[in-house]
Length: 416
Image (cartoon, rainbow, N blue to C red; front, side):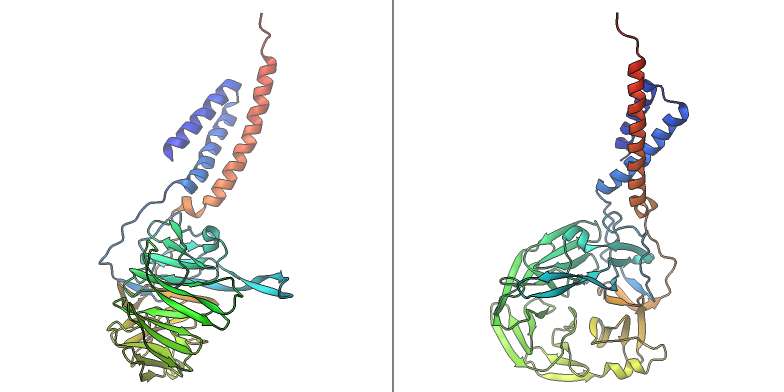
C-alpha cells in the first residue's frame, strides 16, 4: 500500500508543479490523495494471517455486545479465531409476488453477524455481501476457525483467520463434525416446491468441500426439512426427517430407525463425546443410546432454569452447544447455561439475539468479566468513510486540476 500511495502522491505533486497550483492547494491534493488511495488499497490488499494457536484455551466472556456500526469487518481484519458468533433479530423483511402460487412470499432480513474472539476482539461479517442471499443458517466450527453460512443449496465458508470466503457447491450447511475436520451438508433435488422431496445428505472434508460419503433422502413429503449430526469418530450419522429418526453407518446403511414424537436433534454437538449417546429434545433433554435407539435418562432443564436467581430468558427448545464431562452446555433463548447440580449462566447475549454459536474446543467452561471491546484497527473501522470521502475529494481536485491545465495551455504563447 505504501508503494502505491507514494507513486500516486508523486504523480500529483508533478501535476501540481506543472500547472502552477498554489502551495496550499498542492498540499491539499497530496493529503487527499493519501487518504483516497488508503481507502481503496485497504479494500483490495490481502488481509494479514494471524497464527491460530493449537493449544489455545480461552474462557468465554460473561456477556457480549452487539457490534457497533464502526466495528471492523472480519474480511479486513481477521481474528485468531471466533469464540462466539451471533446475530440480532431484525423483525423485518420483504415480500415478493409468487405468480405460480398467487400469493405474497415473505423473505426475512438478517442482520450482520457479530464475531467475538479472544481478548474481547470484535468483528462483523455480513454473509449476504460476499455470498448472495443468506438463508440465516450459521454454524461455527468447534475450534472457531471456520464459519459456515447457508445460501440456498450452497454453503459459504469463512476462514476467520484470513477473512477469505469460498462457496461449497455440495449443499446447505447442517452441522460440523465434533473434530471440525468434516461437515454435514444437505442437497435437495429440484426447486423449493419440488414434490416429492428427495436428495442427499453429504459428509464433506473441510475446508476443501470434497464429498467423502453420502446418505440418500428417499422421496418424502413437503416441507423439505432435515437435520443431522455426525458421531465423534465420523462413522455414523443420525438423521431426523419429520417424525422419523435414522442411524446411518458409513458403508453399512441404516443401522436402526424409530418413529417418534421427539422435537428433534438439538445442535451439531448434541452427540456425547464418548459416542455412546446423543441428546434429543423430548419433554426435556433425553439421552438416546446410539447403538440401539433406546431412550435413556432425561434432564428436565426448564425447572432448573426457572429456579435460577439470575433469571434466564428462554424461549423455544434448547440447543446443545457443548459438554463438560456429563454436564450439558446449552443455549436457552439468548443465554448460554452450564447445566449442572447448580446451573450457571456462562454467557449473556444482547436482547433480541436470534441465534448464538460458540466454539467448543479449546474453551474453558467458566465465565470471565470482559474488558472494553476491541473493535479493530482504525484504518479498517473507518475504511468506508475514508474511501468514500477520499475518492470524492480526489474527484473534486481532479476537476480543479483539469481547469487549471486548460487555462495554462490557453496562456501558453503560440509557437514561432
